[in-house]
Length: 161
Length: 309
Image (cartoon, rainbow over all chains, first blue to last red; front, side, top):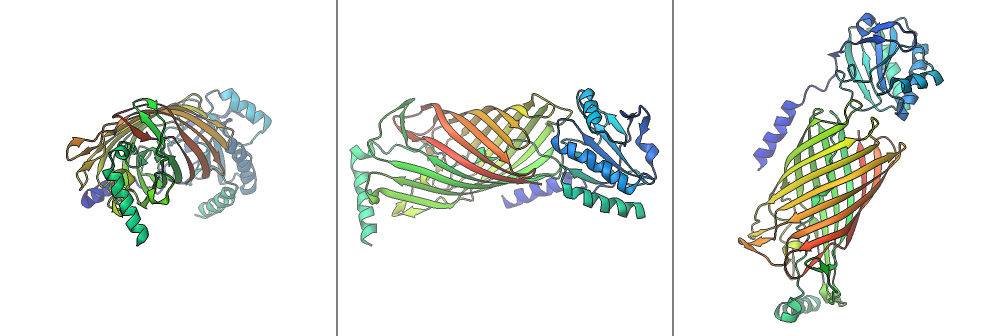
């Protein structure tokens, strides 16, 4: 019995993928809901990028959007950018929210999950930090106010590299 | 010493007196059904989910077939279980769950303290591997999970109180149970605030070292759950449970096994994103039990605190 249990545990350890990040960020492209300009993640290579998946029905997401606006204003856009991906099935719900609480960073619509699925988005809010080389260096689930300070620290470290 | 002697004398009288023995109906506990405490929802890669449940199970309904009959023995039977469960997802598709329990059984017959009996100790454990080929996300409304596992006989099954206690009074079953399990959920909206779920599990019980085998058991549950805002939620489910009669040395025991239909309401409150509390109950709706007489569930209620990160 003990050896069977040990084998089972070993099997799961082998099956488990490397939990560390540093995976290449799946590329995506789309039209910015704010400006109508075409946005492509690859074109931000050389910058640190915060990619945030959100929906109008997700209360914590509605706190994170203005928080990223403040963070972006604080750090500046010389070497940093935020790209928000709205996953509302009806994109108009996302657009209505943006009218009431506008943000100045690009927001793309992803109602079918064409962007979100390759990123493994399973629940919201979910945001990813991408380094200058286009690799995912960290993933955040849920949103806590303390995340802002932690993110700022992490971005600051990445910008020095 | 005198107390022990009197207890032994009373136990002897109970065994020898045929009219009293007729009321010695088996308790349809089939051990403690620890599997019901496992959360059926699939969890995300890297997530750890732990919960503690305290369950008070009252087993005082005397039933003949599907009819409740008056109990003239003044019997009072209950089980109090404490269950710790933990789940970890190695990938978005594969996770493992483990469950450990501590069980206290109490039985009182008549108004005298000599008819009191109790046993407490570590109960059985469960280890379950789970595969979720698809799961609810902002881009999918469906979730399917399949599981295989073992109930491990970590519990005591040889507690003595003057005599070796009967199997239904022992905290553990003393035998391995092989578990098959499946669940399906559907979200009615993208936020998955309203869901319907169904699950089925089957436990194939082995014989323990006293040649006792609890009846194989099947549970089928269907229900609805809804989140109200970001903190409150509730669910309501119907559970059909069927067990075969217990066996000793290959022979079926009378007054064990049957079919039950229970209503299971639950409310929950998410204190934070990670920490929640829930209160649930089990209320008999219908039952059809094997044999002439069985004591069975009157009701049960449970409090669960859970933590995930």
